[in-house]
Image (cartoon, rainbow over all chains, first blue to last red; front, side, top):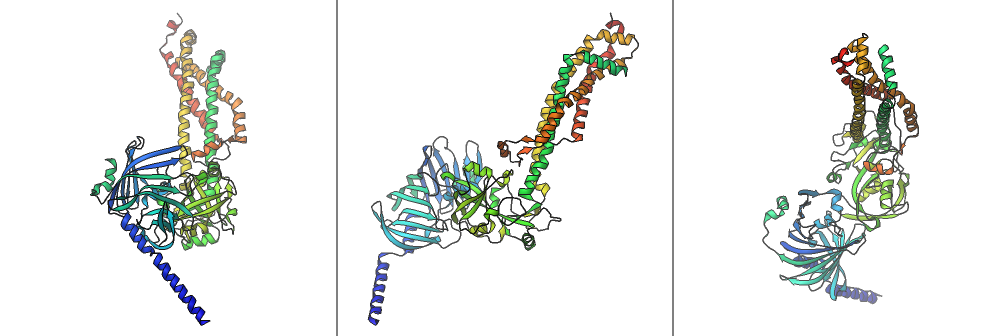
Length: 248
Length: 386
């Protein structure tokens, strides 16, 4: 009997050791993702392809962003949206429309509305947390996505003031890029799914050039973000992130 | 007396011209009395609904609460003060917690206000008993307009997404257990009602509320600096302001119609003075003083107004009584105006309204009848009889 107990204990410890060897720590993965994806600032020219009920619309924009809290977006086309600007500063969001020449603060229930009919709400636009700061992570499995081997990482919030209580990431094991993300409500209900595709090396980082954002509670095919150009750690003048820049 | 007799005889003798003027004036009498009667009836009838279903004896608002400021909603909540909690226990006050959320009717994203109310409360007369359930599924009551707009029916399951007080998203499925037939759009459009304790749990705000509705038996409101009291006068101000604005709009219409009618009387008087110069001259030659002749013509004009009262009474009283008895059906499209219109609006005619309308129109008709008659003072009998 003593032998059997010893045998199973050794077996269990060996299995745990093997498991630990195969699955890296969640924190290490999050740190690696943050190192790869996070930059001091970035300037992106992108296309947002909105698949709506009445067809597909494409909106081009240029975004300057710094850290988690500052972002300025100017819409470049189509003509109807051209000149619309959006400023995120801390937990506030303003939008400027050249047609009315007015700056409006997006607040309250307006934050929950869709941005130009996309699957993103204004609130979603304001969420871009550094994962390792807000979540504890555990690797729970392996899977292959688009031919790339991935770790499945489950994230649970460590800070109360975070939009999504839990997330699930499928992270490229070599490139440290999440290829798929699922965002959950506190109740465990799946709210959003983000697929990141066309990963390419840009300025020494692996970065997805196409993202498909899907609100899982809403009907439709989701919204695509296609990055045409991205530059990291540039000189961005501070005045860009001011309300005055909206009218320029 | 002779002036009155003469005036009446001349007026009736003018035939169709007189009756056209009288008809138009009588229409204006009826229209003004009916229209103003509607407004008189509107305030008590709409405010009765609002008091019964929304404001009761008044409301204690959290100091940050402003129903017109969407920015304020998320920060407008606080622990219910102990003095008010005692009233809540006695069912003399009903706390309501308001939070913002999102629903997905037919797969579309739509922001809503989630209102939490205790299903046992009796302060407000709304059908919330069905929110009292032991089921794990969140029970939801929607207003009729909200249900109609989104195609909700009892038994439908809705996904609601909201943020707790920390800003973390949460979502749950809820079941529509009641469609509330209310005439008060401010407790209907863009909102869903759920049990207070469930919303407090969902938002992580135990024992908190956004506003507390005081019972109708409230005598003296409590003085709570964090929860200022808003009385019925304040809460019904929107209705009084809107009715006042509509009344003013109505006055413009009356002024235009009255102007047209008075113009007709004025023209009639000018024509009469011109065509009946010989008659004027004869009256003066027979010894009638000028002021007497002017009085004949002025009374003649003013009699239009008196005859119009008689004609208006003839067809107007049945119409006015019928609409006061049966009421005016209000189409559901009128609910978009934001007023709590009843299904039928009953006009209320006061003696002041009827008397005042007659007096004002009579005065105006008399003035416009007098103005052309003044020409008579310059007439010489020898010239006009030539």
